[in-house]
Amino acid sequence: MERLARKFDTARDLVPAPIVDEVAGAEVGIISIGTNHPAIVEARDLLRAAGIETSYMRIRALPINDTVRTFTEKYSQIFVVENNSTGQLRQILHTEMLGCAGKLVSVACSNGLPLAAAWIAEQIQKGL
Image (cartoon, rainbow, N blue to C red):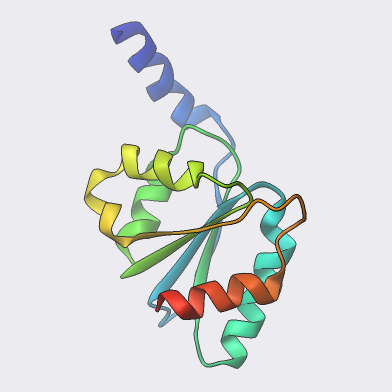
């Protein structure tokens, strides 16, 4: 087990770093992975028009690194947007960062279609 733990710890520094777009004054964070990016960019515009500023982190690879931990510590709520039915990314983040578990809100859907920006914005507004 120690060998596997070392392997994961080494990988944290070798995988591509997340892309972060932080907005001054935002109290809400959004984390996602994969092809949801265009819909999240549009959803953030919809939320901004409704007076809700958000910061956004696009995770590009696992395992997560300290950038993810630092991001989650800054916000009172983190919406984890993912295109699957089980909320797998949220579960991974919960396992990796037990102290942030109460902040992580799953926004997951799996209906065979890409996520829609309006749906993402609506789910975040409901969660606030």
